[in-house]
Length: 270
Picture (cartoon, rainbow, N blue to C red):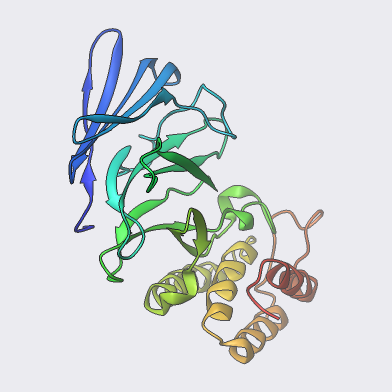
């Protein structure tokens, strides 16, 4: 649990719903009208020690003014007051859902200005995976723990795609991919994908490349380049690297070649 995280409590009425988060003299109230998936008039009010610092409609680059609170993912916090930057101020974090098939979690961070100006908003689109705000033991600051949505559909259909771990921080007014700072989490994620791959290979399942891709990405982040190449070559020779969309997307050695191009493009390997 994030030590300095103050999570919203929700309230509903026949006409409107609201979430409120408080902490460190900050009070944030998110309101909207309607019910999922037909919500409208989303609004955020932030006060500090009773003084209004933000008062405006909620809008996003990815869903305009028709976003709704992200209550899709289990345990998702819609509204929070949290410290995201080590030694920095407390921010207000609003989690939105854009709607649509396999889309999209948008995290908005409202940060205070040192000059006393209204809070400034920055946002990040995590795609389909949820983004859980967690304290991973770095100075009491929070990070978003998610998965890399770029892997969805990359080598097979969505259901069979694996998405490796992605950890995103917020500092200096911007979001940063800091996944490599957390090797223990990466190893745990890699082990999960490897177990799933081995289970499917043992039954000669015809769609394993999505799992292999996620495992390879995690291991590349851990610097296990040689082990990844040996594993992929061995599994390709054994006929275990198959795509359910084999008429469209590559399998076997062709998959391995395509995977390395993809991993280089997305910064996992050189």
